[in-house]
Length: 127
Image (tube, rainbow, N blue to C red; front, side):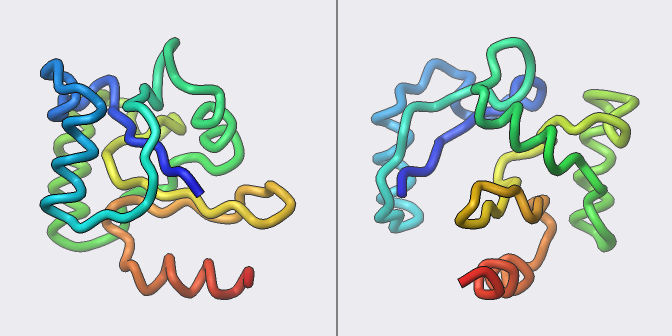
């Protein structure tokens, strides 16, 4: 299953510096040993957002970063970018994950602060 390499339109990431999709794929493979096929870098928020992300966000909005130091840091950065960040469904940070069941229902949204065990348990419950 292909994954999308995406970029956030408010928080500047490496992809905003003119880096090509191929360079991102190479970086991910060399530094993170990714083995899944990647698609082009894409917007996930704003008027140029891919329809897929518009749909995912419409089904599962932002519910917060959770608790802990990482959550507080992310909330602080998000608030600087958008004072009303808590009240819109935009993807706030890279590594936000959506879980979709076999029927196409969006069953969960996990922010980057979520424990991967939670994500794994959610996916396992659907298999």
